[in-house]
Amino acid sequence: MLRVDRSAHRAKRIAVAGSVLTALLVSPPSAIASEQLDARTQPTYTAPLTDSNESYSGQRCQTEHPESEGVVTAKIRFCRTFLRFDPGSETDTTNDYGVWWIQANIKAMNGWCVTRGRATLGMEEEFTPSAVLESDLRSDKATDQTLTLVSEAGGTAVTPATVQQSLITFKGRYRAFWDSETSTYVVRWRGSTKRKIALVGGIEGTWAATAGPGVFLPGAGADVTSPC
Image 1: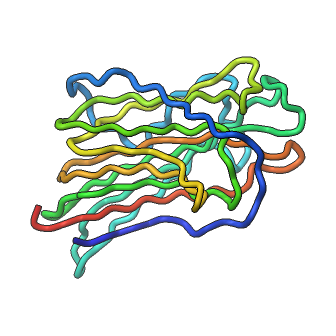
Image 2 (image 1 turned 120 degrees about the vertical axis):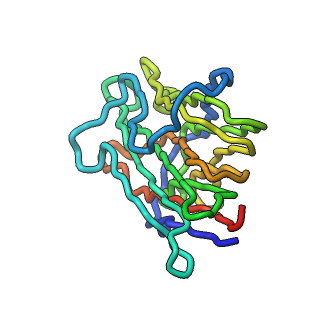
């Protein structure tokens, strides 16, 4: 088994207030009827979340082709998105809020299979999310899923917002969770497939209104094996 990882380094320290709220809506699984999500496809989101014109906001993607003995074993693409919660739509005059979102595709190549895939958002130390899209899905076949994060600006929103994305999960276990020990949001899939897997998820967080939202570092990786 070969492990390939394209995850980021830890960022600097910052203290962020907020309590954790599990915010997950899962549509009932349906028979497979769609194509796999492309990580470059933006999630669907509602106001008062906005993709502002600031350099920090919007989507950024990265693609990697890890190799073993000169042979490409997989194609890994991950995209991060930041959405700002309109300060005029929440009642917290001290802090601002936003959503950090990650999407990834991992596709095994040249006779290899993916047995584990992961996508991560490395946050600054002592960061505490105010909402987390958590999931623990198990399936014995390919299944359409729609995952939704509810953003309520730490409970201060006049009108809540949502961020939503659809994907196909394959036979195995799909998990998303916040790791408080490493200040990292993690999405994982475990199984075995030659097909393109997708990973999606996100968190809501806050920062002082007089400062910026800080640094977050996306990453993705996979365990691959050959023969399958």
